[in-house]
Image 1 (cartoon, helix red, strand yellow):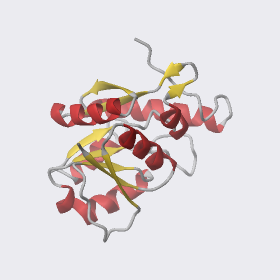
Image 2 (tube, one colour):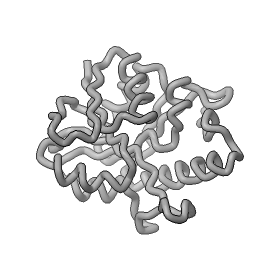
Image 3 (cartoon, one colour):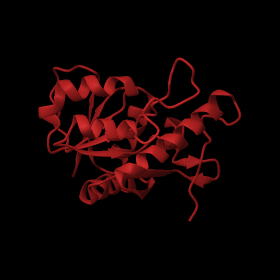
Length: 190
């Protein structure tokens, strides 16, 4: 059994926690309370992208050696019209630089909370795309997701996080413009 710690208690954190629990794994929900210890082997950062640096700074030693999952979509919240990392980078890559002793992954950012909870995107199954440089860490997260009844695919190296963030950005902008619903989005068919 794997213990997954989720920092953040919003819709995404709840949906991810539901998947973890459905697979028979343990869930530890930690708000943004920096005094609560992290016990999980996998730590999901279900917070806005601008909170990542603060969490990394405050918990760097505690996150060393752990699998750390960035689920953020780093939108420019002033314009809602662009991503904030440099065009050749990603928020996940920035997080990896802040946490050099952690195994950073990008996942869940191309999913809406509703599609994680329902395990479907329209008529298709929900698929979680996972990017990272540590194959063992990716497989550990993929195993937890699959055990919870959701498809998961290894999307490649951490440099693929930029593309995942772009997909997440496009999906969010479509939903905000009411061109798709929050129960819709992109699906992966094999």
